Length: 383
Image 1 (cartoon, one colour):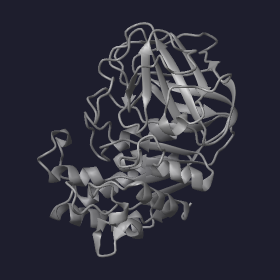
Image 2 (spheres, one colour; image 1 turned 90 degrees about the horizontal axis):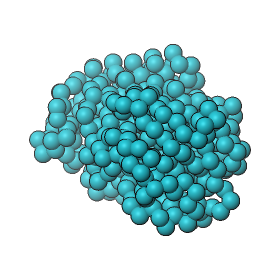
Image 3 (cartoon, helix red, strand yellow; image 1 turned 135 degrees about the horizontal axis):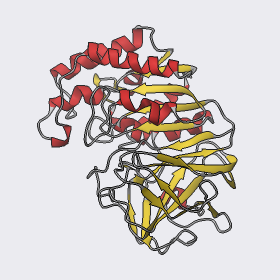
Image 4 (tube, helix red, strand yellow; image 1 turned 135 degrees about the vertical axis):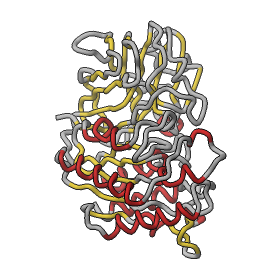
């Protein structure tokens, strides 16, 4: 039985937060990506997404390998000698993924432990066109010319980016059915954590609990509205990004901050359009996520209160009122199976609407590594 051990939520090609290769795509190149697994096993397979492709995508070949010692944190392109395995798809080395489709590889024999870093290398021998990707990886991916599927020292991978492409999940035969999915926006994605260090709150939670933890965060994502920059609204992507992955038992929801805050500023054009939403509308959105999760058979659905964000570009009088009302509903309604009160544990004792300075990455909106560790502890306490 396979269990999702790592995920990244797909989004349409865009300029993103930092330079990336999604719009140009790939041609006669190899792409090596490094991911940290939260469940081990003896066999591994990958899930490749072409969710936003408009024509078929050809994968000429694919390999997996353990990242070389020391490469997990630095996200280097070198792999452990002897660990490289070629992936197949229905027995074939190459595969064509239909427009807006996905494919799952055949399992490959490769013993792996939870916490290990795995490399996934894809070779594109034909022009891909714009590539489905995940903008904010907070770790490096590597690109080089030609077929580098069996390259071990990584030196031929001459370009780097901090996004993931085409790869949407890695699964192992761990047989685990107690996976935890974190569903949210850039805070769940890990914005503000140290790049290359695996310090997101999903990483901290996996270490603390020993359970598979899936990060279904998407920077800038909205609960109620689609965004060209920040992905399909959460109500539409829950099935694809969480419920369709094997082994998920528990969902943790941290959403609504962007719905509230995007309309508070005129300085960021990517926030537009930003409809003004009410607490009642956000509550109905949360109820719909709870309904979908329970219909899918998840054992527990946990609500997380919105973090303090006074002083950020999302803050204003209306934002304060709406966020307070939503948090009060999450805490007291009883509609979630449990509540992780992240607002309480991260608030500045001198001003409850602000992040505690020791947990603030600097923008008064996103936590730093210490803040993310505190978030993981708060969730672990209510699992």
